[in-house]
Amino acid sequence: MRIENLLIAVATVFLVASCAKPTAESETKKWEAMTKTLEMLGAKYPTFKAALQVVKSESAAQWESALKVTGDEQKIEAMQAANTSAYPSFVRDLDNIEDAMEKLKDRCSESTKGGDNSDRESLRNARNDAQRSLSEVGYLLKSRAVNTPVEASALTEEAVKKIANATSRIEKVLRRISDKERKKKAEQKAAEDKSKSEEKAKEEAKNPIKCSYCGTMNNHDALKCSSCGAPVEK
Ligand SMILES: [Zn+2]
Image (tube, rainbow, N blue to C red; front, top):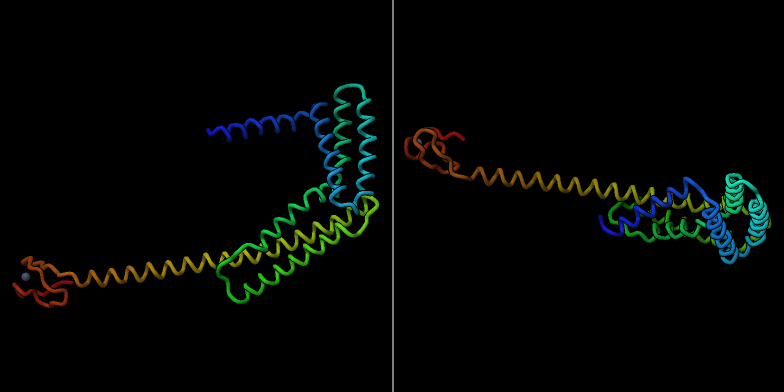
């Protein structure tokens, strides 16, 4: 096992272990990361600042009271609840949408071979559609101020849906083109193999034929053996 793989395996074991059994330490680390994420998103998406602020203060209040809970198990549970409340669906959407948009951009610039005219047109349309969705979502996320988490959710849901739809549309076209291309290549290969084997059979037919009676080698087009006169079997 290579050392990187070993490290990944060890890290995975720790990660699984830490997921399976949360501790006050792991929840504190998570809380610190959540706080940073909220800060980062607020800086990146200023129109969401108010909604993010609501999440931040509500979850911070939950966190503060969690710290006062007595009894380890109950305390950890309260900490987990605070962490969950710091990451509602609109925060998760905001946190992930940039990656989704990057992925869509990659799909748009993916080069393709093959496909007929109608595929080319579908691809062109899907790419235009994707570009339009990307700029619409960019606009949605940067220019419309949202004040509450409910408003924020409605907006991020719309944004996520736009990106997901555009992505699946372009992926469908890309898949159709690559399937056709694969099929075309397979057909070409089959045709090549067929003509090769026909060629081979023709060549073989020109080989001299041995007389089955006397063993003399005769021309491939001989009807009778040149030595004994027996019919040449082909
Ligand atoms: Zn013969």
